Image (cartoon, rainbow over all chains, first blue to last red):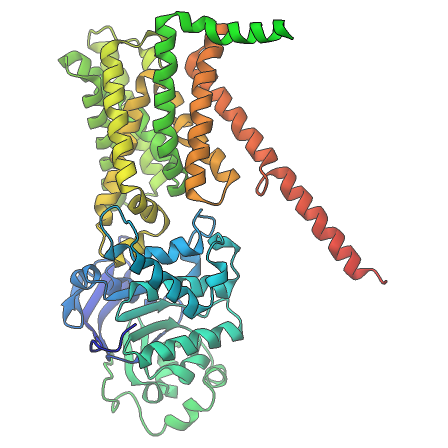
Length: 276
Length: 299
């Protein structure tokens, strides 16, 4: 939560991921998340968003390629508490007997001794994080007692408590109402101001153009990446969401597609890495 | 009134005259304690079937230990832990789901043990391995039980927060740089150690109940891990002590009565738990329905 240290980038260099059932989830994916930006990772279901996320977080080992965060390999980034992860809601066991406070405290474990004894500082940071997401009054609730939006915020508070420079959010807007969505977006914009690098995976195209500086378009490989305006062209979106009729896409993205389609296309966009 | 008290006192005191019974009571209470602590983790991690697997897989280890003249705990631990490694390896190398792999591996280990028991000459009573024999437990066996149990408790006590995090959110554990692979094997080895602890008392069939039921009962009663741990220990230790009494007074199997008591506790919790019990759920539904009716009916 400090503005001192410089922001970190994420470099994904030629990653391929194969699962044990021989299914290729991701191939030759290269992209860059610029430091200090909010970047959206957009693609249809099954496009490999989660796979790329898990590779960046080091949860799975790509069969090829390398990933650097701020120039460091992922393992070093984990050890230095530089990267925090906000999981999808359905990855969490909401019946688990832990309180909101305890979950947020888990964000501090990496700073503690091996018995994980919280110090005064850890407690203070946990309370500050809870305050930022507005869950102080709910800190003693079991996590399953929270509403959908509060659940998201609880895990966002854990990421804040971890004080990572890079924050990855996996589908943060599924199942939350508009008010909560706005609240989360406001918080993300604040975090950007403080120098965090934020990567958000989503298939909610409408909200992307409102708060994401940059977008990476994914379907098995990187189809395009650049500023959100550059990437949201009709061509690109058709390519990514092939099955969907264009009209529905235009509806989802608002006027953005119409405006930019003639200005920039995937060949000219600076960071586009297009695979035939 | 006095009569009742005297009878109750005799019921409690009479078995304590016998050294072997005093011993059986405190040994089973200790085993109950160790199993109860681990059962909370087993329940939350969803490893009940894994506990079943490890408990059956130790049999060849026990037989080989006796044949070689080494402590049974060593062989049992080696095979119990070996089975879990085999399960992990096969699961990662094939397209099979975990339950199928577990089913194949533990029955294979168990059958191998069965073959060994019938071929290697020893004084092992298969019945005692299967169902336990706390009343006839030898001094050496008690020492091994104590060592294995103390080791388990020490490991869990020291690493309890990390292990809990590993059960709850292994991805986050990894994201903050913890060695999740090591936690996985730590949890598996304390599971194997617990089974070694309970082997002589409860037997490999009954140990599964002691590894699952206390934690499952406590899980129905609370939303906090610390309380869950305490309830689990209380239920397990009291079932172990009472079960041993029952087995003396009614001349029935010790392991059997312990597990029957544990199951009774579970059923009571399932029905009467304040928040998650069947009655509480029924009551809440009625309240909701009433509120709905009041809202829909005109004033």
